[in-house]
Image (cartoon, rainbow, N blue to C red):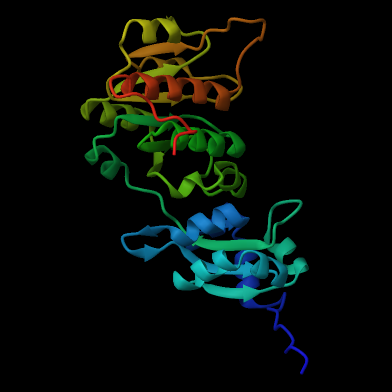
Length: 286
């Protein structure tokens, strides 16, 4: 007996139309939903819960992707998500990538109130002030996750956390650590200082050298790094809020480092200093 034909969701389905609209910020904000594309992001979304509420709401998958990533589809169903089989044209219509991987999830917003982050007494925080490029924002979030930061803060002058490019660039790290959004930079700095966190502004023209900070042993305590705009860095009024303005030393002939690279260097420097007494776990450790 031949197999029963696979029933695919119609391109005109209200569910497809609603998912497609989430590529636009105003619809994301109205519905408090965003898109997560590809197997890694969908896997993390299916595993994530906020206050016991599953983050993944819906999953659109081509029949081929549903077969290839059967474990992810199973996790999505176990999380209570509605699973829709769709042809490649529908997936391409929903997706914002040039070459979709056959899986697109619809997720609930998961940002954390800034007050909750402060209450957790974080030791390492990345603050994105005036960061406008979504790819950079997502990459810094990924770096913060890898370095063991406890939180990320996106100020009100920074890019939308749920921009599809930012979500993709985070490679699943968006689902790993608390992220506060829309916090004025002055409030972020004031709150972190009150929580006992030292504020370091990363700036290529900073008076203090990162190597000197490490050599002097001043980076072992709770620290928040403030990262600025990709093109013009941090404005003077933001630098003035920091306890120190720190530059990453350039030992070669490069003119500068891009935002994400500088953020990785700074965050790992703090992670190393904070773990100095107990050692830092290698990525090769079991």
